[in-house]
Image (cartoon, rainbow, N blue to C red; front, side, top):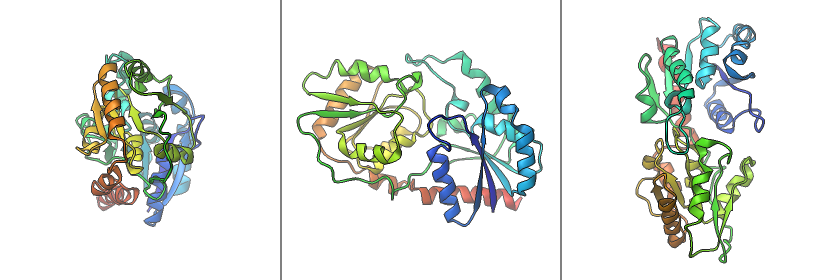
Amino acid sequence: MKVLFVFSGNSTTFAISPFIQAQAESLRKLGHTIDYYPIKGKGSGGYISNIPQLKHYIKKGNYDLIHAHYSLCIMVAVLCFVKVPIVGSFMGNDIIGEYNSKSKFLIKSLPIMLLSILVQPFMSYAICKSKDMGKLIYFVPYQIIPNGINLKLFKPLALKLDTNQKRILFLGNKRDINKNFILLKDAAKYIKHYNIQIIAPYPLPQSQIIELFSEVDVFVLCSIVEGSPNVIKEAMACNCPIVSTNVGDVSWLLGNLEGHYICKNDPIDLASKIEQAFEFGQRTEGRRRIIELKLDSESIAKRIEKVYEIIQRR
């Protein structure tokens, strides 16, 4: 099957988002041809300006279907008005909105949420990352398919931890309100019995991130809203202890395994859970759970392939 991936090309860090590239490579291994079309331009106007070129690209490529990632990219694909089925992947805040550090809904996210609903009747199928997102898909068949993890890439490494210092890893953009770095910063004030170091190296190449998961004592996610955060699954694949706010499907992902802790959006509670992770003091069984949940990239690629096949049979 020949598929065109349409996605945002506005990142200054990656030419292609790592999870999109990983998904494409997994589908290629199943025998599909995957091409890329990055949409460059800010705001709805910038996205819309891509329509003529994308339309030409689609017609020239003779694609079996288009897989667009994120609501604005889905909109651009829809407005090309080509007779090619469109699979739309909703990413998270495009359909469930944005919130500030006090978990208050931001009105500015309403337009993109509305767009996520308006494009649905023009899609052949939707993919979302969690049950919360699925509740907002009304007009198109959909499946909940989280992003998969490359278990050959993300794996535990035999690295020696610094016993004199407890290292906390935060991988989000500290300036992104949704990533809520201030929560971790405030929580650090309540950790009295340990000598801690917060490592917040965003942005960082994947190879170094993998090493960090095995070098730190705990990975912390403080987000206010998420769909199915890749970074949680990556940490699990490396058997890294985790403390996370209860966002998206995190509670389901972490399960009841020791070394996994859910915290409130509260610095005292976060500090308490981090200290519990320190006391746990060993690697987790997160990788085993990822395998049990079939969240490896190969299993996820097969689920996406089945969506493609459903569309082709119509």
